[in-house]
Image 1 (cartoon, rainbow, N blue to C red):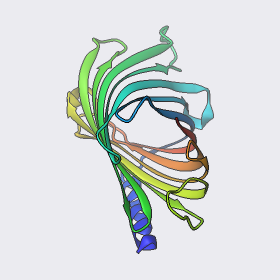
Image 2 (cartoon, rainbow, N blue to C red; image 1 turned 90 degrees about the vertical axis):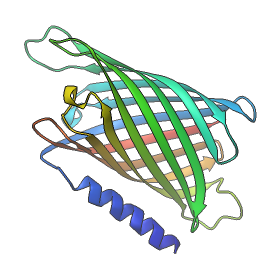
Image 3 (cartoon, rainbow, N blue to C red; image 1 turned 45 degrees about the vertical axis):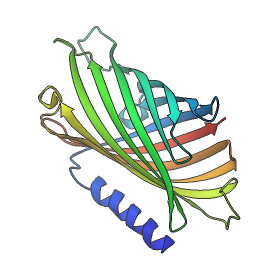
Image 4 (cartoon, rainbow, N blue to C red; image 1 turned 60 degrees about the vertical axis):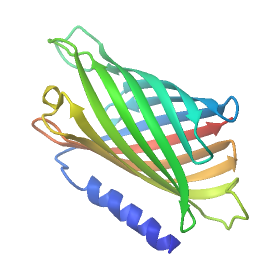
Length: 235
């Protein structure tokens, strides 16, 4: 049953990622994430990301995303946060070197076990304040649903606290406001991901994986092949 559930998750990710592949890109992402608990009910979220341009040609995006978390119980939590993300441009004839997006975001996370898999679901809503070259800045909202499964590769007695693992995840992005200012569609993008990692302790994971980012454009679609290094810390 454990293998069957894992296989279904992988096939789901691959099926979604295979759609709408028109323009092919290749890039690298660095993902650093920390969660810190102040007490049983309150904590902090922080993630920082660097993303390259196509063909690994310099840095395209920096993302800094802090948040304040309230722990409902051992399996559920909610977070309210802010994101700052400049996009560094490589466009001829444009003096401006970057554009900036600010976001306010809310999320709910639910974690559980299924057939030996550690499963987490994340529902996120984003209010996006987007700068635009040659036009007025605009406001949009986007909804995201994320599912991730972790499979320990060694037998565990109790909670998974150390050892190698495989992770598979998928995230769907939907434009819920101002889609005509973006790509003209409700569907924005999908990210399917498969990684191998190692849990050094209950406080730290590191993983290296492949992500396919399928983006729906107003005129052309894009399939971005991404190598991602991710480090997770928990205090």
